[in-house]
Amino acid sequence: MQFLDHIITVLDFSAFEAVWYWVLFALLWSHWTQTTLGVPFAMIRRAELGDETARSDALQLAEITARDLRGLNAQLGPILVTLLGLILGFLAALGFYYGSPLAQSVFVLVMPAGGAGYLRNRLAQAWPQIPPQDQIRALMRHRRRLQFFGSVLIFFTAIWGVFFLQRVPQSPL
Image (tube, rainbow, N blue to C red; front, side):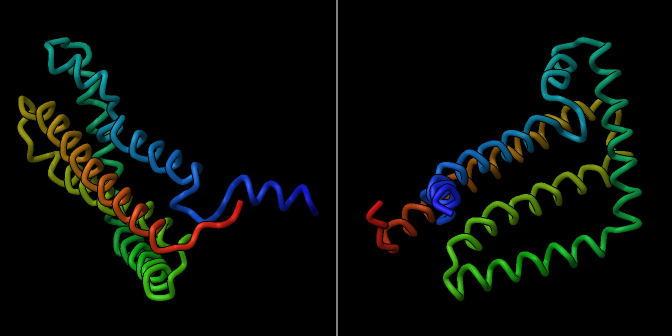
């Protein structure tokens, strides 16, 4: 039993002051900005610099992913949006109304996933109407939007975390 207590102490599920939370937060945003419609950033960059093979590969990957997302949205879009709304509402009520720090931190992780997913799905829906000569630029623009969104969110999450840490008394450990 003492071993389990030590593990729980190391993981420290009080969220904002725990290292695991910030590592997970950084990993999620890193993952979300590394690919745009399934195309790695390095390939988009090479295509933008004039590499025709990279451009062809990037556009094929983006077309496949966009088609897949459009099909998924047509079949499960309303169900997924409803489920995400219920989960976010539950986490927001539990975290901010009832004061659960773990629910607050999970809300701050899940809510941006919804925003990133919305931006990704919007690009997938618009992909067939984007002229081929502008598609690489659209992928870069999408990545920059995600980076901006992520930077603003990381800033506000850090501010909220500091505010939270000032409000909550620290444990003697």
